[in-house]
Amino acid sequence: MSRSTADGDPDGRVGTLRASPHRRMGIGFLLIAMVLSVFAARLVQLQAVDPGSYAQLAAAEGTVQVMLPAARGEITDRNGDPLAESVDGTMIVADPHVTSDHATELARFLTRRLDVDYADTLAALRAEDSRFQYIARQVPTSKAEDVVADAGDEGYPGLFTENDPLRIYPNGDVAANVVGFLGTPEADGSAHALAGLEDRFNEYLSGTDGEARYQMGAGNQIPLGDHTVTPAVDGHDLRTTIDRDLQWYAQRVLQQTVEGAKGESGIAVVMDSRTGQLLALADYPTYDAADPQEYDSSLYKSSALTDVYEPGSVEKALTLSSLIDAGLATPRTRLKVPGKLYRQDRPIGDYWDHDTLRLTLAGVLAKSSNVGTVLAADEFKPGQLRKYLTAYGLGKRTGVGLGGETRGILPRGAAWTDQVDDRISFGQSLSVNAVQMAAAINAIANGGVRVDPSLVMGSATLDNGTTIGTGQTTERRVISERAAHQTMLMMERVVDPDAGVAPRAAVAGYRVAGKTGTAQRVGDECACYDGSTTVSFAGFAPADDPRFTVYVVVHDPVAGSGGGSVAGPAFSQLMSYALRRYGVPPTGKKPNQIPVEW
Image (cartoon, rainbow, N blue to C red; front, side, top):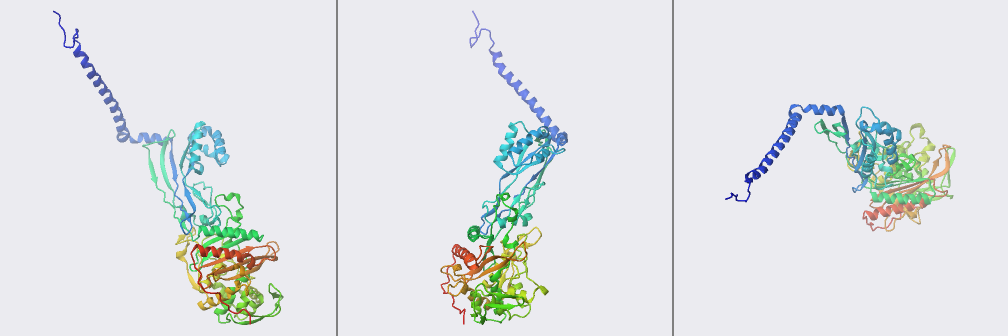
């Protein structure tokens, strides 16, 4: 009788087959334990027994120092709209330890793909005793990543990228003369500010770069080598008093005005009459801050501060207001004004031929009579007019924060002769910059109190250590409130179509006070009056409750141009836009009718 198993296995090997899976699992666990033991032993060696051995190997390869760029502060307009800002950008960096062997080919590749110099790039790729060399700074991130990836695909390893914010100017030429721009970064990676506020407030905007130090081996960072980081401290934002939209409009009106008059250049200033804040500071011609290399470097400035000129008859408002303040005249003072006034070695005349006129002081201003102004100014005591003009701010820098500002020329001492005295009274033989003159006229608008013009909101520190801004402005009384009011009444007659010379400066529905200017220009070649002129118009509105002061200047317009016909209409456009933009209603009062003749 044969024997059988429960499973029908005649050989009885069931127990052996069931044991084999357990044996295999045991062997597997043993192997895993052995591998883990090796890893554990290595970890103990690195972290506890000999942590410096691997780091020493890394040090032998090299320590890399990487600059961590601070975020540069924004420059904004008064409403926070950016005029200059930083966006994500990238630097391309080389490890010469890796790139030196193929430096020539890689340099050619990079020169084709980036705006870099071949010789400088080749030297960086071959630099000895260095693991970190700048190749290109402030490259758009997508472009930088493509270049590095393509270089690798071409067989050129050793390039890598780091964060490097890119400066952009989103408004093109709008306020470029104020904002300025940055050039190619310095060799140490710091910003290279070339003009405007970017230059003057470079340290304030820049912040402090940080630094990371780590060790490299075989082209990679060693995890257990020394690694230290000093964080970057970002720069401060700089908020200006400029109104971006008003600035844009001022630049367009100015361009149309200069081109229409076939002029050489022009300036437009819009100021808050109550605070002295500069809402627009326009130059023409100007440049695009986003593409400055396409323009002549002579445009990298604010002409409203750097260029001087003789103001012409706009200055008469200062002369006659000073006479009134000194108690030497009133708007109704009567003068007999001949066609010519013979003084010293040459006669003084008016821009139009006339017989003897019977003008009031208001009429002298309304009709812009040089002769009448000189006769009225004869009432000043020696040195008295100069004292007033100094109080108005002439002959001194405004200090709004932009570089290259001139103080103008206000003669003193022996240079202030009788002949000079006569000519200064009607705006010749002295020179000003446009912001100076705007601030002086604004003192009349502000009830006789001159307030410092300002370009920066709050307070900010220039690179020279000076703190400026609206938080630092000062005020001083130049003339009495009564004298300022009486001068306003006379200036209002300037835009009267029946009495004045600038009806085209009027703003529909508003009372406007202003003054024209036409001055002879001194030629660069002859250093003499060469027949060309500077024409201008300065004024404020509403005349009886001033909100804005506007000053427009055009240099060397076509012959026969005048302040009323060229600058007056531009003034009207700018003033009208500002009043509407800020919702300033008319006062509802009619213009005064103070007599201009007797």
